[in-house]
Image 1 (tube, rainbow, N blue to C red):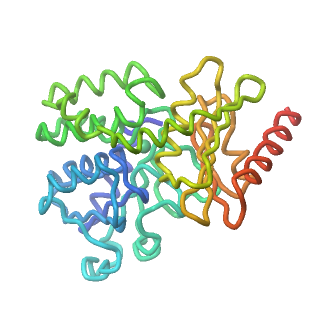
Image 2: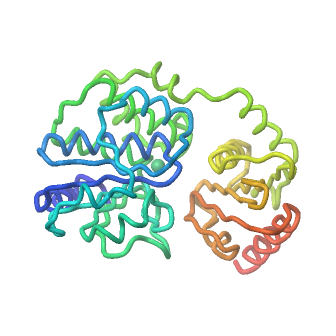
Length: 330
Ligand SMILES: [Mn+2]
């Protein structure tokens, strides 16, 4: 469902509230942060008191750059101090959740509990842990939450500064992996629109620049690729290197670029005691179902699971067993 066809629901929720909190998923990326900032710009025109809840203490490089450049501009609050900012009339507060619809993935579960009126704007499939009692604006066909928010900004002809247009464009470039995944004609149109507002492709590349050492570590993960039925790629790290979740996810994205590969699974240590799987699919293979069986979750495009007190080879065995079980079930 497109965000424009659902705009009345959004505007109704906004109209009835005085204080609005925005919150995206944990481990902010540029789609989460970009869409939050885009939404903030939309709400400013509606003269609302707006706060951005960020509990993350460390940020990936692009997010760090944006937060530094906008230092003092955004009303950022931590959920520890949420009570200070809440409107005393409970029904005048609204929480808008962006770029996730899953309870366990949000910046602050406390905010979900404290604020009754909730609106979710997201491009991921619904699942078992989708936030309850919220108005859901979900478009699982669109590239990114930044694209959704841009559509809203365009529809209402909201004048945004070129800097903000650039951040929204960065979210689209990130989530489409440079227009190679989940990209439709509309995605290019939305990017064109942002460029016409002054978004800079050069600056987007600056925001998305990678760390060379992290890149080298990720390349190592590509040396042990195994395929199942020529269409599922699995790769695993050595136990000695730890990766951030987003890094495992980036490698899973990369695996989808190879001929015939429809789904990918990447296994690696996130910390000394925690092993993660990050998975991606082109959409035709339900990786969410496999990951749910492993105690994780996801949809038909992306998914993840984590394990404690085990080894990479045990996780790999278990994953292969479930993939086999699923393919026999077909
Ligand atoms: Mn996203």
